Each structure stands twice: as C-alpha cells, then as structure tokens.
Image 1 (cartoon, one colour):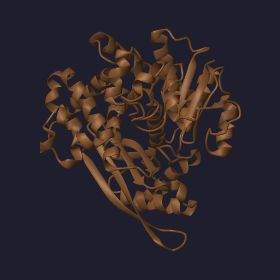
Image 2: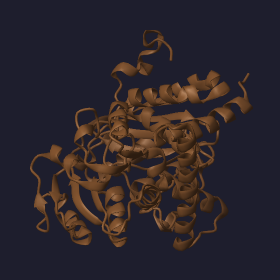
Image 3: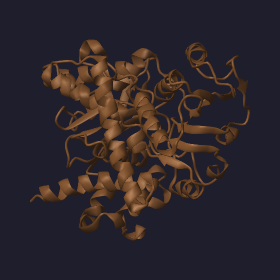
Image 4: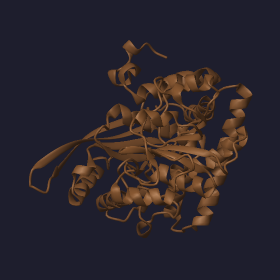
Length: 428
C-alpha cells in the first residue's frame, strides 16, 4: 500500500473511519490476488465522487442548505449500484466506503453491477413530509448528471424508503421527458417496484445464516439469536428466524435493549416498535439499561444490523456468540475480526450476508427493462439460490486457503473486479 503521506488527503486511511476499515481490508486481500495485484490500486480509489449543495425552502419560508454526495467506486463490471441514505452523520469518506463495499458485494454474488453509494447529511426526522420531498427531488436533480439505468442506479438505505425512490424516479423522468422506471430500485409496486424487495435484505441475512449454520453444526430450531437493529433488515431477519423455530433472545435499537432468554415474541415486538418508535418499554421482555451489555448476551447467532463499526477491539472479546452474521455494512473493524478469529467465532461478512437487498434490486432492474414481472415465490427462490451458491463458493475458497470468510469473499470479489479491469484495459 502506498505511503499514506503521499496520498491525497481524502484517501488517507488513518483518520477516515469506515474508509480506513475498507482500505485495511484491501490490504489484507492483496497478497492473494496473484498477478492481478498490479491493478490493486484501482480498488483504493473511487472512480468518481460528487459533492452537491442541496438547498430547499422550509415550510416556514427560510432556506436551508444540506450537503449531498454520490460516489461511484468502480464500474468495471457494470453500472454503479448502491443506496442513498439520509443521516445527520453522513460524510464523504463514509459514502466512499459504502460504495466500495457495494463493488465487492455485487462482485461476490456475481451481479452485473459496479459499486456506488449516495447520501445527504440531514436528520430527516426534523423535516415535514413536504420538506423531505423537496430535499429528495433537489438531491436527485443535483446528482442526475451521474445516475441513469445504464450508468448508476440508486436504491433505499438508512432513512430512505419506497416513497423517496418514487420521488427520485419521478424527478429523473421529468428531466428525461419520459418515464424511466429503471433509474432506481426499491420503488413502490405501482411504479415498477418488485415483489419481495422490502424484505429482501432481511431474507438474505436469514438464508446466508442458515447456510453458515449448517456448515458449523448449529441447528436452527431452538437456536438463540441476538439482533442489533430492528428496522427493515433486523426486523425482517428476526421474523424469519422466529418462523424457523429460533429464539430471538435479545434486540437492541437506537432507543434501548430488551432481553428474554425464552425468546421474544417478534410479532408483538414489531407492533410495539410501530407504535412507540423503539424497542424501549416493550412489556414482553426485560430491559437492559447498559447498551454495552447487549454484546455479552449468550447466543448462537449474533446479527449486527444497524450501522458501521459497531464491533471493535473494545467489545469483540465480550461477544458470546458462535457466529456473527453481518446484516449491516461494515459493522466489524479489522481489529475485531482478528480477536473474533482467535476466539473461533465465525464471522459471515456483510458483502455476502446482506446482499439480498441488492440481489432483488437486480431482479427489479431486469423486470423494469423487460416490463415483465415475476411472482414473489419466483423471486424468493432465485434469491435463495444466488446467495447460497455465492456462500458455498466463498466457503470453499476460505477452506482451501485457510483464510477467514471475509478475506475469502474479498478474494472472490476483487479477482472478478480486477479481471474485468484488466480485460477492458486503460483508455486512452
């Protein structure tokens, strides 16, 4: 890896959080790339990074400005693909890392996409619905120079949903003078969305967890599951784990942590969260006042399904799980990876574990192009097959090379990315 002092400041791994984590992951995989390692610097540099000003008129007549981003990390294998998040802590370096992980994720499951990501630094809870629409449309118009159904296809992420995607699609379509449903995925069904998309990421977490559990001898019926995050990903996964006979023993979200050794009633918890906005105060479980104690709850499978860098050197040693399945993007630091490896805790990395969402986004994109839509059973079956095949291939590489699943996933994905880069060559 180049001397950090010789890099542009935005590529310096020492102070860039998630981007620094990604760069360390690339450093770890480079020795396994053989002759393709001559192209490894490609992985360390985003192809394009756009920063935009997003001014909107608030309901009280004042003007507010927000900073937005769209990053295309790599497009050697196809158009950029990745979500858009609205969050008060969004930064360029975070979006760069998320875009890079999308490159790896799409290659790991053999989807014909590169990696991209977007975001706006805003707390959407402080906006009215009308203000949120104005923010979305202005952001979409500002990044319209980069996106398109054959260039870069956004999707929902943290604090964005089907409605936000509908506004983005409509804004882009107004610029084009025609309805362009394929410019985004994760849309509502009436405007070209796909069945199965809403639950796809959580379903993918469950499918990959089941495949990994079978490899290490965890029987799902009766298995104890702890989940951080109870939104679209964590909540969806919890429902499927419960349906398979697992005990969801602990759940943590932004508002609190609840625990019940015999298993939490997932449907009742979902109803409580819908009404109260958090798991806090759920009467069907015991509250854990110290959030740090969540990580030491005994369980078979731990699912971090919230934000990045939740498992680090400070708490990795306290984890009492046999397996971690990463529902979030980048929840585990490299230092924590090493601790967990030494403790024989299997970590199923994000780039395969949470790839269900982008896989069904791919299905939606294909259906929009053909104007022919599949049944939900067809979608779920194809999703399970793609993720299971991808996991099996990564497991085989990990076993043969005696490396972790994360390194194996990066070996598989980065080899595919750099093969495409080498075959395409450099222009001019």
